[in-house]
Image 1 (cartoon, rainbow, N blue to C red):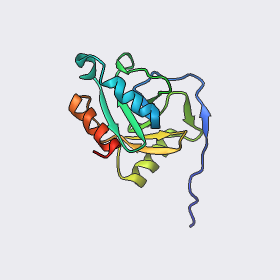
Image 2 (tube, helix red, strand yellow):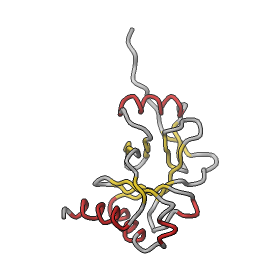
Image 3 (cartoon, rainbow, N blue to C red):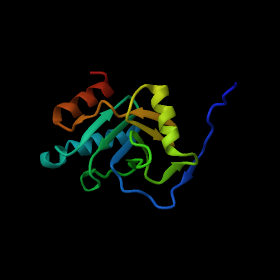
Length: 144
């Protein structure tokens, strides 16, 4: 029996969900990192962050998430624990099945599935937002 790969598309959410993560790419990620260095320690202590060469993801309560021009937001999908999606977009297929397929493919959870740029970002290595963690991210980006 041949199994075809799942094909799906993004669709606008009828009702956006409350943000649980700030997501920033490229130059916006660098501005978000700079903003994180300025927030009060008490607020930073309620946030976690992870980054790769292209993106910075900061998770926490909506009221604690920093705002920077160009930042977009994500939240964990209630139907698919372990799958994070943009707050304004969702897949046109059942997210629980898509989440299971992605978890199997990447052997990691939780995962952020992003629309633009198209990406899957593992969120299993988030660390508390501290000056040291932010400095490590900056050093990684600058090659120092």
